[in-house]
Image (cartoon, rainbow, N blue to C red; front, side, top):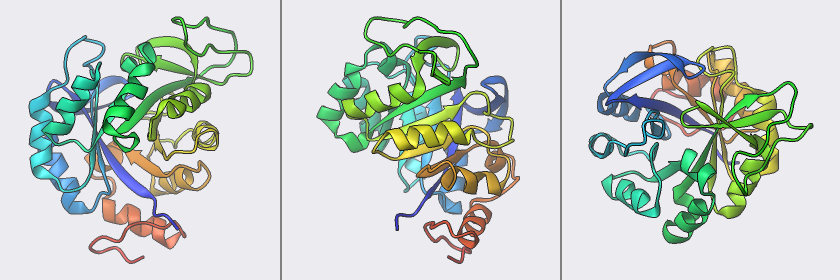
Amino acid sequence: MLTRRIIPCLDVDRGRVVKGVSFLNLRDAGDPAVLAAFYDREGADELVLLDITASAEARDIMVEVVRRVADQVFIPFTVGGGLRAPEDVRRMLEAGADKISLNTSAIEDPQLVERSARRFGNQCIVVAIDAKAVTSGVRPASAEGTVALDQASRWEVYSHGGRRPTGMDAVKWARRATELGAGEVLLTSMNADGHQEGYDLALTRAVAQAVSVPVIASGGAGTLEHLRQALVEGEADAALAASIFHYGTYSIAQAKTYLARHGVPVRPTAGVSV
């Protein structure tokens, strides 16, 4: 049986790790390289580093931050934010990243996913989806070729760090992105993000059942039980969390011990009995 992964997320704004609620009210959580080294020692399976304002501010991701993090860790890490072309993907891989996350740029140019996957391999390309639940109404597609919402849709994709609604259905977009070559989906519930009241299990399960690649559940972790729910009820392959790890509520070891005791297969680390 494949082990499930626990992935701390480093949301970076101007060189510092931050964390907010529903993508708003950001507060400082530390230096990304220092936190990355800490999680590497703690036994995290992977790391995700997201420059959360690069796309909204139309600037390049901070390459020097990526290099600093790469110097501190031996576990795989994914980098995203402000990547607009295969050449940007190449620069991040050369800076030390193992995988690249595409979000706004993939929405604006879906073929970027295909071009990048063809050049660097599906295993390097992650499509990140920021989704918000919609209760009613129909939005038009945001651009030619996008997947518009219909009356049966429940979650809408947002771009530019959760600032712009796109009119795209999250489940349909996840399916299309993987058909284009994405090897993994990083799925964040904007409604749940930062509230620490649990993942959007219905959203996670809907996407996991719609695609054949691994899905990382993101947004809402507040307890260790929430991690288990995302991996079992939500059918995710990995659980991503920030606040509960950054501010010391739980350690990676505590998370893995809890999961192992509840029948979820995890990679052993020091101090964890599986």
